[in-house]
Image (cartoon, rainbow, N blue to C red; front, top):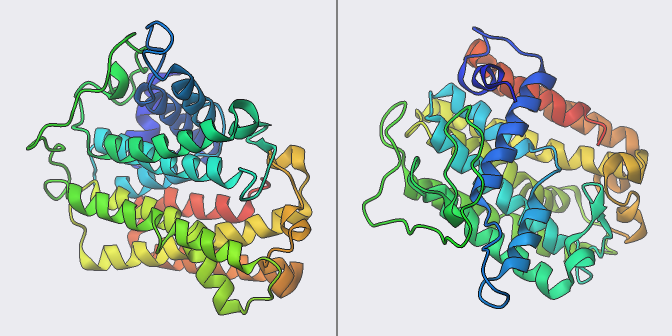
Length: 355
């Protein structure tokens, strides 16, 4: 990857160095892929039975080589608003993606959606078995919080060095284990002051837990075969899908220190709007796109009798709701000027995407 392009994509303001959405997303996604590869455990080089090499292989299979990386993109775009340190943003971006992938691994299993394909390849439980898939999700969740709080610039997980912004990830050092985070280690000061690590951990845990993604999944399971009201459907999707998208914006802001109350409120409203819009568009694509385009089985919501915005509002009603949420997201950014252009572009992408 061209390092000048990457530095421009992640480090320069949109006004100073405008990029097309596609170029910026491509550069960021490539950088996130490197950062994830550097933090995931690799082959140990040890004799069989001495290290969980197959688990590590399955973790890398699940995480690398696919996905839109929308959540990391939101972290970087929000971080630009507050001048956050790129190393801190890398940790937050990797953390939200690891949580997201763990949820996909578990969601694809027979007890949940029982899907065969994810991101254009066999799901983890099809490739490695159900028991290993369960452990992959567990391990990715734990790793997410480790990379979030690991001191930037230290040796990374599994003996790999965290790449500085614009530098390629190093190969794993065979046979090495993660360096523990020591008491008193801190993330670098950035933007408006020191990074509130505890607030970041709390925000991510809440978004992934029973009042966020996991709780939304529980409501989804309980809603199969039922005709939910619109408030019930919204509550489910704001938790199941919206919470992790919204917290991605929040982590980007916190990476620059404590944001002002006005900025925090505007970004919270933006996150809620794009979080719900993402799910509405997912519901639309489930009935309008094919499996090859989606990279997963199309039409499963209807086949499993799941409540969706299309089943509740009809296809045109769901499209109108997506357009309204898109307008709400843009309205939240009105006072921020060109600094928020990438957040605007991401709102456009979330609503206009084809997969």
